[in-house]
Image 1 (tube, rainbow, N blue to C red):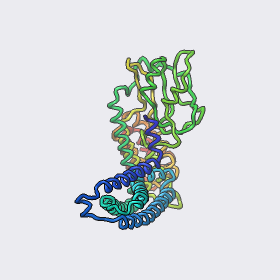
Image 2 (cartoon, rainbow, N blue to C red):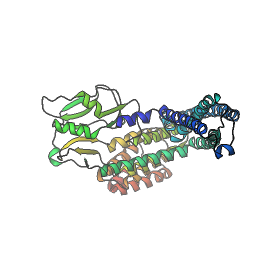
Image 3 (tube, helix red, strand yellow):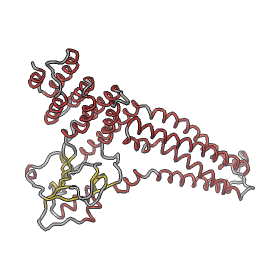
Image 4 (spheres, helix red, strand yellow):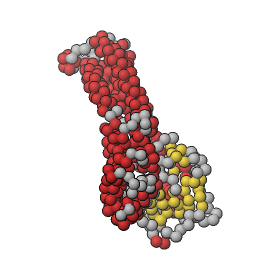
Length: 435
């Protein structure tokens, strides 16, 4: 089932095929309705001839082809802006949105409806096409309204602040959904059993495929591991690209045990591109790329970069009560599968290193990075607080607090002091600034 869902998510043309089928059914259905109700009162009131219907349908075809051309051209312009101003990784965001895909599919459906309607009515010149003509007018008027809405939607989509807000909203929604799913899953445990902590995963399984690791058929895999008394810990996070012969997971089993490749192939789901399901980092990494691009000399937009830093801090604050690993048990309560969800040190480095690298000469950027760490630390556990303070020291390692100007000192000192209080590192803070 998960493979089917992933296939549907990544095949945009399936939505267009859906609209083509629906509008084809409308065209055929209304044709036969009119054919069966020639002497009804409705037909007498709305007495539209075949010539009038043909004129309407021809006008619709011409108009819709023009609208489709404009819509497609607009999509290409938006994709160019996304790639040039934001990041090449943002291209999929626009194509995966429901509004542009549904509107373009609607226009294609209308064109198919009109062509099929012309074909059906051409050989039936003596029929009154009441229902078909009225429906043609309605869908054409709806198409005009949708086109006006689409232009408004596109004009908002290319605004950087709106795009950033949408990324953050989607990331937070995914985190909330993820945490809710974990809390409601009876097979998931957040802590390992004491008697299982000493298990040595001494064997490696190497991937037989190349692609993005998207998901796992958990129930099927756990049952298979239970039947063969195998313990597995997956070392690749979701949405990471895996090459053939990369280590996919480590395991412990009987000495003569060999995995059934066909079963593993059905349990571990790979794809040609990352999916939006089960991940938030896809969104936050796009924020990083927007921030880095904003800090480049060619663009020089530190305000956008600081906005991205604040938003990343907000997303990670929502994530701060998550766990490093998830433990899955079989029906007998025996731990069978461990999935590594995140490493907080790596998470901070992956998201803030490049921003710090390109913005470290701007103390405003450094100050905003420390503020983001403070926001994350406001609702985190002891291990995460330690990671936050260690990363803050990494960010300010090149700053000489004894010899910088007082204005520069005040800019950094306030934020660093707040972080020290949140992470309970007041003494270390005093040593750093020389007090």
